[in-house]
Image (cartoon, rainbow, N blue to C red; front, side, top):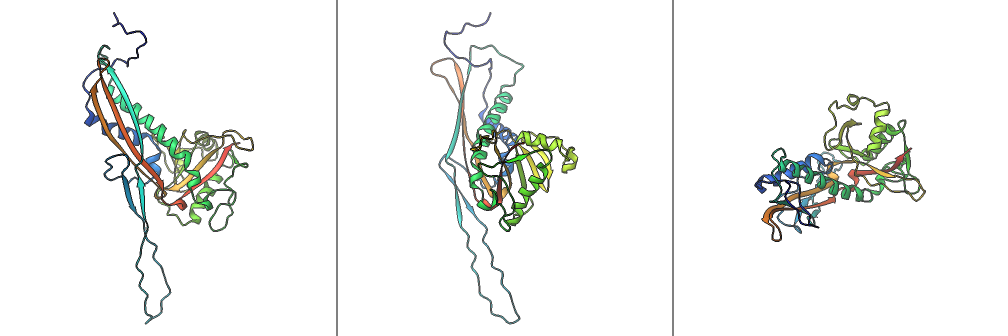
Length: 311
C-alpha cells in the first residue's frame, strides 16, 4: 500500500540514498558545458578562481603594435605598448533547491544523480543561453549589423528593424557567407569563427544545396550543444534559445543569426556550491546549489548579427 501523503503537501518523486556533493558539483557543470552553445562560442579561459558572486575576473587585452616604414640608418622611435584592462564582473547568480522525502519508497532502477544532473544542466543551458543570446545583437559593432554592414564597404544588408530579411532554402547559404564577410572586413582571424542559427534555419540548410553533412566539412552527427558542421570555415551551431519577436513591420518570428569569433565574447561560470541538509518541516534531505557567472562582449568587432525571418 502506498504511504499516505498529507493533504495539500508537495513531495518529490521517489528517490533515496546518500548525496555526494563533491561528485554532483562537477557532474552538473559538465552536463551544462556539454549541452550549452554558450561555452562553445565564447572565451572561457578567464574563469580562474571564482569564489563568490560579486567577484571579478581581470582580462588583459592585446596591445596594438605600430608598424612604420624604415630606411637604412634611420633612427627608430620606441613604442611602449599599452593595453586596456577589462574587468569581467561575476555578478549574476542562479540557484535551485530540491528535496527527497524519506517516506517515498526506493526506486532502485533510477540513478538520481544522473537524472538530476542531466536536468539541472539542461535548465542551466536554457536559462543562460536564452539570456546571453537575447542581449548579444546590440552589443556587436555597429558596422557588423544593419542594412549597410561591412567596415570597409558598407555593402551588405543584414536586415534591420522594420525590414528584416526573408531567408529561404535558396538564399540561406549566400546569407551566411555574407555574414562571415562582415567579420573578414574587420580582419577577424578565421580560426574559432562560428555561426549560431535557429532550428528553422537549420532545416532550410538541409533543404538547400548543402543537403549532406559531409558537404559542410563535418560528417559527424549533431552533438548536444547543437554543433552541425562547418560552412565557409565557420563552425555552425543550431539553438532553440534565440529570441523571437514580431517586428514593427508586422513580420512574425523575427530573430537574430550570429557570426563571430570566440575572442569577442567572454564568459565565466562556476558551480559555486552544492550542499545537503535535513529539512526542518518534513522528513527529507534538501539538496540545493548556487551557480555564479558573468559575461561581457570584449571585442564587438569580433561579433556580427543579422535580423531575419523564415520566408
